[in-house]
Image (spheres, rainbow, N blue to C red):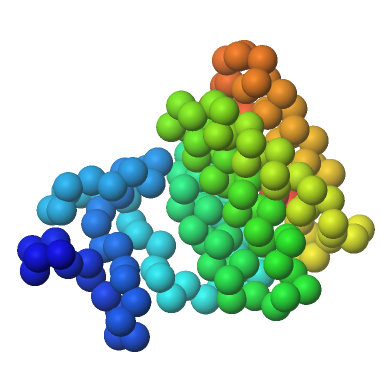
Length: 162
């Protein structure tokens, strides 16, 4: 790797991607105006995580929601791993819908459901697995059947109540 292609690194030496991204998370050329980045060191309470991810989903930025949820998955307690991992997979599944990858979207949406199904009721942090699993499964069914998907169906509610 030449010096002009070396990756940006954080203070610990881990690679960091500072390239700007579009609302669907696709890299843009350096110097382009992209959407605001989710900080690599994002630390939020569970309630803040759910609110922020929901706001991003509602604005059509499922990739950003995935990054927020992935941060909670990686940094949260082991007992909540299924929750955050399932929600992150849901968000990346929606990202694939937005990018036109129907097959990948359906696979990820189906992968999210069993993780979320592991949660007891009531689920932690007001997350509503039945309200998430049902719409995610129906979306996967429609994707596999080749049906058109309205943008409003991608704004799946993460909590049982708002």
